[in-house]
Length: 434
Image (cartoon, rainbow, N blue to C red; front, side, top):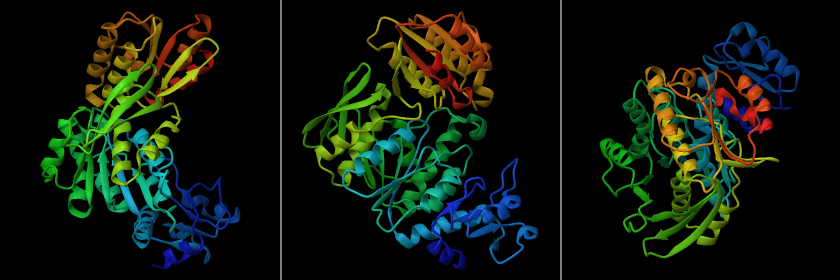
């Protein structure tokens, strides 16, 4: 592959002509509102060594490499590079917790191995190949996150990353606009299981999650063949690792137990008992890859959540539980229920719309309001057009700017405040006035 030969000499990839790395390869990707072919010459002038384009009129000299489809070329290059190195790859997907679980797995494995892992949530048809192209011979393991909005997305990403191992954190109601139904969600996530069954080594699975077990069995897995399991049923000796939550106010603490019923404690800096299965997945994968207990404990206890995911933020007047990176009915319900049981007399909610729910949106937003009704909170603020259409007796704002104006005029003080909503609602902007 001629392009791969160029990549070995110029192993830096650029997709944004505004941020050009000297000597890199510029891939002129197209989007709904842009065509980077038009910026290829600018990228070269700013220091890129070559530009890969798929529009002949822009290929004006030998610094341009003309291909049929730039995106497909990027994906093929990444798959080829992955094959050349043969790195052990763990593919991870799921409705909730996949980014946190990916970070926890990486934090554990780094105690023993040289690990590459997806940065942030670069988990789509562009982000996955960009991550794979950062693989170096010195990397022992890569943890590759795979996101999906439509059927077939995970199958496509698995064909590029070619994971040896797979884990689905869970399945829930999210991106229903693209999937069409909850069954569509399960079918799409199952594409990772399908790949591992046919070409991989094994899956890591929460055996206490009946939906995941059914999905695996439907694909053709026979428990426990090609399965490494974990369970939040503490005395489950069939699982490689079992665990139980011992404390969660506010930080999650767990007791983990192996098949020999030998146990150890982990004290995390994560908010929410719903993170227990994410932590246990990392423990199990650490055990599978032969880390000792202290390495696993160190990896998990040194992990600090970031990017508004299960974070505790202290202000001058409040304790903020910030989980404003994403939201769907499953994660929203879990966050509210966990928060309701937090050991604090003064608790308030600022929750925002759950996006991309399609025809189910009105029903699911009303269900969340009903859940809030069933619990006691000092102040409840709903942000977004969908929550504003529900039947409720709370403060409603169609956008975060109006909510901020209200919060400036009506201060919430000496409270624990849960901030939870889809990223598009931008609830993190409320932090500055709390």
